[in-house]
Image (cartoon, rainbow, N blue to C red; front, side, top):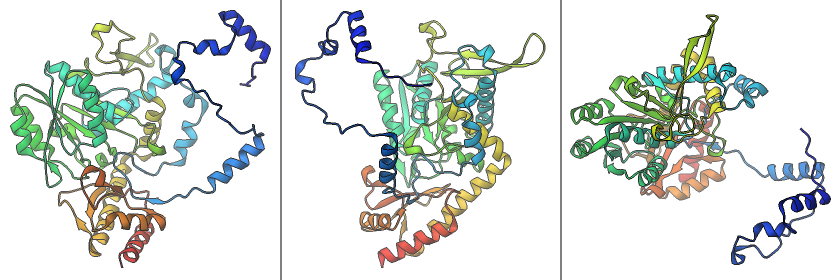
Length: 440
């Protein structure tokens, strides 16, 4: 598609048609005291080749550090075939299936996504993806509240802070009360959770593994939730762990939600993401978004349909479960491609994540770092050392990002470190050598 700029005569014609004399008249409703009264003083326009050279000059100043940051967005290997296939125009430009009968390819991909995520989480059904893990959690809590007709939620203090922030925003707008449960040794306090659960609680929320990398005892929380007749919600923001850990559904979770970015999608400066909600069958008509189903057409051939659409654009507004407007179709498609390619090897990749993380942790402990928590972990852990901020900057200058500094979360001199299969033994050894040099 060619871009042809409008001429000055075109502009005058458009202004005449809408009944104004000057383009400034279109902004007269904006108070003058907040209008910009000065020129932006932009430089002269450049030619295409000049722009290209300028961008290359700026790009040459970028550095690509070896990063050991996770905390909700993970750098995993993305097979080249995922980029090649997902970049095809029929996938890249496909839009939401407003006419499902002519969107069989899109519906097929969504159905496969639903099936794969359901298998990994151990749940009965999964929706056609959400915006991201944080909003997926918020929608899950709203669903639990609507189902139970209760408005109090008990949330683990080890939940990702960003998820909690989004949840509180939703709760404020929905007249729900979010009660944060304390932690003990890096995991959610089972005693505190049990004491909070009562007849006023709609659900309790636990992350698996939690924000600090520790693996929670889902079995115990599930049992307490059942005893108190409270729904059990599990949030997973590192889906790679389900290649190794027991699925939340097998612990009795009612709702599993989270983030599937780890499958076939890049960190990409924090987005776009691909959230999901998986449920037991009794919640099928409460789950937000869409559910794609498989059937046969009039000729007996395999066909896919939008089985349930619970958003307000498709059904009576008062019957809608959410105003969620779309799904992350392209991101979900990339996840499907990744999982189709990897298959059973997902377990091997997950084991490699844990093995490499354990290797780095052992190396750091051998040179004087302290493991803050002793709970089992998957591919993230918290370490501590005096003057961590100084060490962090030294390593940064050597081309390493050690992890996420937890000082902003009230944990001075602590770092949340993540290792995925994307990092090699050589890179880990280089980091350890740099650490040894920096602290000597």
